[in-house]
Image (tube, rainbow, N blue to C red; front, side):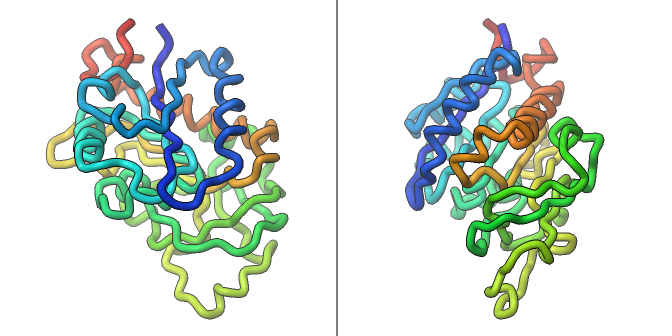
Length: 250
């Protein structure tokens, strides 16, 4: 059986119009990725027993407090057992009450300027999520600013926003806390949300993915698919390690 991914798109705040389109886009890539997605917005799916079936959990444009205490505890346990994590765009505005989630994510969203054509610089062309991208990637999307620097929890930055390529009037009034160059996508070989002596799986985040149109862009889809493939190859779950504690077995 292929690796299984639980894709969670529940929202408790702003809801992106692109969520439904993104679900369809990911469904269409299941065979190419050789994965099985289970899409849900049901927070009751976050139990130890249910999460134990998955090789990765994907947070897809979530916002607000989208899990209850039981769900948060199950997610923490899943990370502690080597579970992998993928997060896209507004997932950086979810579960702000759960510091372990913020560490696993890398950084929480702060604010964004208006949607406009912008340039993203590729810092690492060797990663599976960036190998297909041009060195300077011009696209229409939101350039997120973040409340902290993901490098502070050990994340390796893949993409940065070229701040000279777009207008951000608020930047003059704010203290930007995400470090320089401006991070937009990154990965953690060992997710920082793990407690104590837990087994850390991989974590991958992209701040891109706001617009409906970007979910039909081959470069963006290649970026996301590369992130998913990389995360699954962590060897901490049953997809690639028979001794894993979580993951698909049938």
